[in-house]
Image: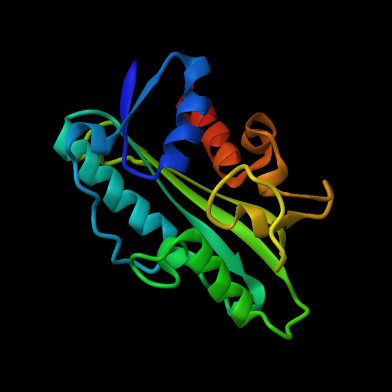
Length: 194
């Protein structure tokens, strides 16, 4: 495999996956570059949404496809924002809007446990009966005051106690080494390797 379509138009995800696949000599083509519109994400689980996105991108491109559905789950909020992470404060919400909503909902709550989830689905073709599915978690805490300028989404608020840093304070290589997406991709590549 020399190239695959990434079922995402998220600039942050495109950067991360391009960096993770570059050492393998695999070109990652964002679906938007091929004129492929985003698939609907109607499901309540990360895995179901990722599978739907992968099948859609593969069908439209006739290429192997990789789809990621990821988000942050906060214990005190019953797992919210969950699959709605990117649109938590509304369909056109910015990262700042989403973070502000979480901060407001956590006001007065001391339990700040949170984890990122990544469901990664790889399919060889649109009708692949054996999709490769990996789901991982990256544990930390949600903090009200943002720190760091790297990353995207909830990264400035996602604090990793063992490192005394937020995800937005990590350099890209360090983040890719420990993040939910980095973990998922390593597991995926181990499965796909002969």
